[in-house]
Length: 406
Ligand SMILES: Cc1cc2nc3c(=O)[nH]c(=O)nc-3n(C[C@H](O)[C@H](O)[C@H](O)COP(=O)(O)OP(=O)(O)OC[C@H]3O[C@@H](n4cnc5c(N)ncnc54)[C@H](O)[C@@H]3O)c2cc1C
Image 1 (cartoon, rainbow, N blue to C red):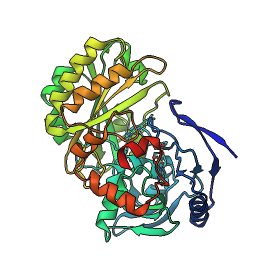
Image 2 (image 1 turned 90 degrees about the horizontal axis):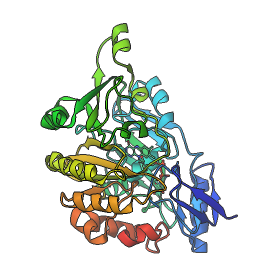
Image 3 (image 1 turned 30 degrees about the horizontal axis):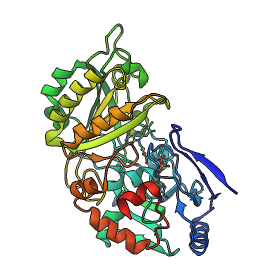
Image 4 (image 1 turned 90 degrees about the vertical axis):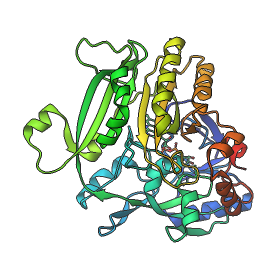
């Protein structure tokens, strides 16, 4: 039966022929085999927290919401195998109960783990890669309906699968590198742009997780529910966010003065679905120059550029389509207001950051062309070759992905 699917923020909506919700991997295999016989396209939806049309299909939506939970843990290697449909928010407590935790997390924890892995979802901190870099193995149903084991003993396949936006097939289980459980202390600062920029790289080196929101106007902070000190102005100021790992006992005063809690309770923020986000990654060394230039441009472009600029960092990895492929990166994101004509503004941001060889977040708005893909992602051709071998008919492609990866 035809079904209409809409993403979380409401900027992507389409009609698929059917939605299938298998109870287990065998059910998912059967669905892929049936689609292969029918010549149907297949895409896996997760929680729809991507802004790009990367779930879209005219065929079958294969929803893995029932494939969730922790399958096994290896305490010696600090690894956990989890169902691909597990929400990140359902990993924190069961991992903690086993003495483990995710190494790093992003601004929200609503995504399913395979959705986050598929797009290179990340937190902040150059000592950490993205969720994709934490994936050490997975079980993948390919277009033929075969299940293949991807692992460190298949390094090229693993590097292709880690950031694959659902194009290599359907992941059913994923193995994650985790770490010993830890608590975080959260600290917020309120500082001028210049003060933060003049010490930016030092702060990146000193802190576990360092990130900031810069506000181009007085109204900007409220758009992301960010609280400032009483009576403080947001205009041209930064909200600086630092998380440090707490070792040893936590005293009551720590908890009162600075929020201290289990790591998975500290990371997530609360966002309203009021923004359409673009996020680009530039080599860390060029980052401060890039955001200085972007700040000038945003101040000139008001009011269309009213949303905060968020700045984070992510450490280098080896995944073929990763924005951090062999490069530490600065992550820069800006947003357009739904219902306004923000496309010219975002296109200008694309051109401005393009001068810094920006790579893109696959789940956030971008304008990447095939030529830019090949120029900025050294392993893009290697990815495309593996994709064609695993899916010669393009079962897992859609219009948006075909332009770049056919
Ligand atoms: C409010 C908000 C905050 C965000 N914060 C961050 C952040 O801090 N850091 C960051 O990097 N990003 C962030 N994002 C972006 C978000 O993390 C990514 O877009 C992520 O991919 C969304 O996960 P999802 O579970 O909703 O997946 P979806 O958007 O539903 O799917 C993402 C992709 O994964 C594929 N997929 C899902 N499951 C499977 C599977 N089992 N097998 C194969 N393919 C699969 C889908 O087909 C699709 O291509 C944020 C987005 C929002 C809306």
